[in-house]
Length: 286
Image (cartoon, rainbow, N blue to C red; front, side, top):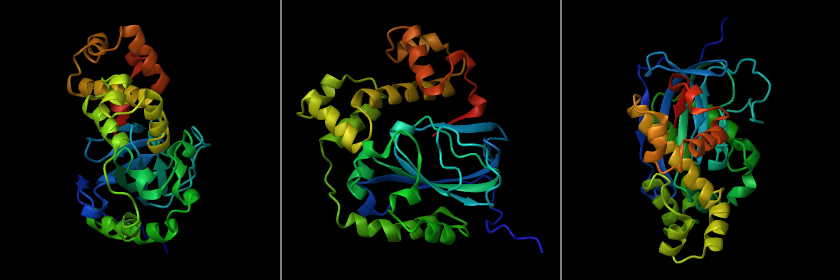
């Protein structure tokens, strides 16, 4: 007898977002729920008219639950990602890492944190997590198998939220909820799309540059300079997505890169290719 797929056939398209419980709002920005059809390392979002997309750039912290079909044979590790897991923890330092390679019909339930939210909620020293996405079970935070088993039959984002918040809410009761200097500085970077100086961030938040750098590495996982670099590039890519006819060189100046050569160097650092080789139909900006 053929084994049934536990993931129900869902109405198309499925692309939902919801806010967290008020007690978790200081730590979690929002929850997202996306349906995908994957073939190898390529994703087909059923709300993207079948276009091929690779999950490739997300300059923020998240936990992604992958629910749906049984995993099929995977290719060797890409960028040291754990391939046989359904729960993945990603930090800004792992922003250019792709999702594990697998095939099938899946829902991605994504928990997006505020810049310092994971540090404050879980007590992690963020730069201790390394530069790659890691399997959530390696952190010993949650009974991952139990959570995934319950999520496998979820038909709506609200079901996944109810399941995960049973584990998150007790942590919030024992975590600092106040918004502090590092969070405010990081939010300034996001609002300015990375176009802010480190000296300005430090001065505005009554910190020295060395204090700011120490706090960012500990509470966010990257230096303030790197964080600003990521969000400036992310802002430029969003701009290019909405204005495809604009030239890369014009966008580089618009987003305050010194010149197109400086922009190309930064772009290559995150994507391992030049802007002229970038294919928007094959990349997903999260």
